[in-house]
Amino acid sequence: MKTSFYDLSYQDLFDILESRGLNTSAASLLFNWHYKKREHSPCTENVSKDNIKFIAENFDFSLPKISKVFEAQDRTVKFLFELSDGNRVETVLIPFNNKYSICLSSQVGCAMNCAFCYTGTQGLTRNLKTSEIVGQFLMAYHWLRENRPDEQRVLNIVFMGQGEPLHNFDPVKKACEIFLSSHGTSLGHQKISISTSGYIPGLKRWAEEIPGVNLALSLHSPFAAIRNELIPINKKFPLEEVLSYIDTVPLRKKQFVTYEYLVIKDFNDSAEDAHATAKLLKDKRAFVNLIPFNPFPGTDYKRPELEVVMNFKAVLDTYKIPTLVRGTKGDDVLAACGQLNSK
Image (tube, rainbow, N blue to C red; front, side, top):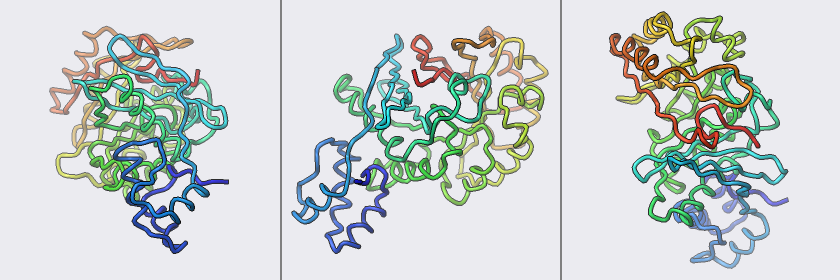
């Protein structure tokens, strides 16, 4: 069986070619061709015949297939990708000023069973391979090139799609290596963010293995009873323990940890909730994203009034905690935060 080229870091490919006695310059040529130029076709320019033969016989360059494309009124684009085994995941391109952030999935479904998330209703089917994570990025870019040629810039990658990224640590880590590599897509560390519900086994590895990449925690409440309902693994990995590990993550100058707070009507949107959240974060290098809840089929939770969200922000402002109310994008095609599913 052939190895997917997109499962390999630059060093992986270099080592394979070197072990076969082949010209290792092909590693740089292939990475430049497929990641910088983002070409589909085989790379043969300046590649020796021996390398071309070895690559053709041993590597697979197939990518996930676009099953459906949903274009929202605000120009958000949601892709339903079909994988080689028939499983499917969703990916979202989020527009801003003719540029995009891309929201990647890391698993088919999710084991965390978060109550606020549509993905959580489908359970976990399997982890994604590195090639399937990287493939989402490349295929979304190819779609932009063909359909919106003046808007090809994908500037930020957020692992906030389907799945718990730190529950699939190794493939996510290698995907980050490819995105960060000067031979790969050459993104800066500040352009990649990984979200977690508070999965401590992954957090324990973070500081050593993917330092510099931005961390976002799904906080959603400072109170155990509320967080237990929203994020069931809070019972196994309590918030206090999660925060103690986050405090060990090395931060660059001017870098913050982002705390995501989903504001749900009459559930976690009171002044008491806001003050308790502020007191929890006031001595940390914290940035808070307030996200008005995005309804999905079957949920009992409700979206709050904008005035309530702004009042919550005003409380955090008094504690001098940088806070942003995140605008909702793509909710008319179920592409907003918490609305992804493999359908």
